[in-house]
Image 1 (tube, rainbow, N blue to C red):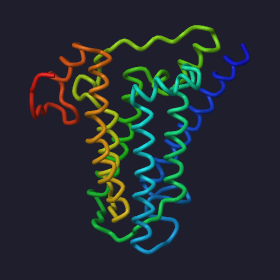
Image 2 (cartoon, rainbow, N blue to C red):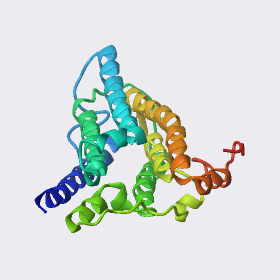
Image 3 (cartoon, rainbow, N blue to C red):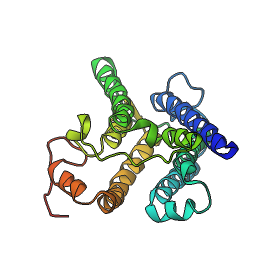
Length: 247
């Protein structure tokens, strides 16, 4: 019983770290409120800043992708309780993001800068992107996605079941609204610096590289229903189907 309760507390802690990192991210990318942001903070030469920032992004991408793979999950749950697997993924992903916030070195040279109506539109788009990203998690199973459901199941002595595959709300328009929200939030910058662009370009490349791996795992796990879903619904751009090749 003690172990199950500790797993529940661990799930709450991990979720709390995620919430804190998500809220900080809002200020980090908008350059508001927080003391250190994507364009405000430590100083370094262009080469040093670029090397550090790329290393931080690479570490985040490596952790995020490695721990999401089914083979790693099978190995990992042989070491930790399966009920704590998702919370651990959430915690380490959040800590990797916090590491970026902490060690990021701005490259402040401006690529574009807007004001007036254009700046307002981009700011609203940025906020909309974050809203889409967060809102999309509630359109599936937010508490399962972030490990709280598994932690509650552990303390109750009930193994949490995998959520049923459902298609609703934004998932009727695109297969990955969470990633679409991030892309909008990162690109819709009223002021785009070189540092911000480095983050945005590398994150975009990561998303387009990681999604095929994720979808391969989803097809393996869910079978024909997800394969048919892929044929019907575009990946990221609503109403745009670049191909309809069979899975």
